[in-house]
Every structure is written in structure tokens, then in C-alpha cells.
Length: 165
Image (tube, rainbow, N blue to C red; front, side, top):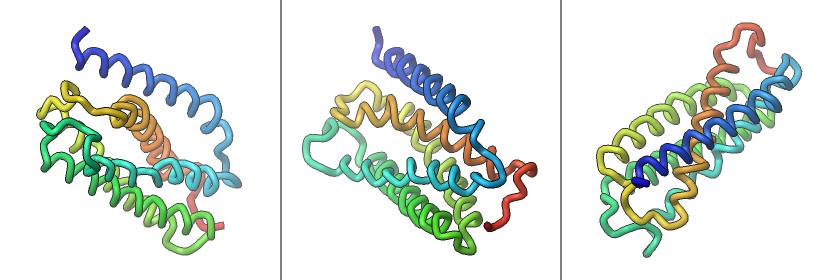
């Protein structure tokens, strides 16, 4: 099987699993009383986006992995993760600006994910040795996509009238 086909199957199954888990276990628990806690939990999942900085560690990915793409992936994810961390803390502390920062995170995260996916396909990164970073691509990125959709769904739902607690 071709590398791109393997990745496509694995990413598709990961999206399906995370979609079903979210549909069955997260969405039903969202209400006016839990909205901030659910958003905080979803942001917590994104906090670990500092991990792609490991792309700069020796031997982690193929030497053929384009340096410009390493920088875009690592720094874009790092920025997204740090904004998620700050928004997570603000949500947990019920601070003013938490929702605005969550919106900012969402916009930056969406641009980052879409941009990196396009560039990675153009550069055929899926055909390179990626070491443990393959797990990130085949499991964590699909989870982030599902989580981002849920965050946007929450932020745009008028039903919950997102106001600070």
C-alpha cells in the first residue's frame, strides 16, 4: 500500500473515532452550566502543541524534511499551544477575555492546521521517515481537527449565550 493511502486510512479512522467519542461523551454534556468547563477541557488538548518543537531535535525526522516546513509546523503549533494554554487558564479562572482569546486561538489554529496540511501534502512529507512524529500526524492532528470543530460549534451556538460565569 502506498504511504499516502496508509496515512489517509489512518487519519480517516482517527477522525471517525474522535468524532464518535466527542458525539457520545462530550456534546451531550454541554449545557449552560458546563460550557466553560468543556471549552477549557478542549483547550487543554491543544496545550500540548508545543511537542512539534521536537522536529528540531536530531534524528527525529528525515534530513529531507524541508526546513521551512519544520519551522512553520513547530512555531505555528507552539504559538497555538501557548494561546490555548493562556485561554485555558483564563477560562478556568473565569477571567475576562477568556472567550475572546479562545476565538483568537481558534482562528490561528484553523489557519495553522489548514496551511500545514496543504504544505505537507505539496512537499510529500508522508513519504519521509517521520519517526514518532508519525503518531502526531495520524492520531493527534485528526483529534485536533475534531476538537477545533467542537470549539467552533460551542463558540457560534447562540443557544448557550456565552457569557462569563
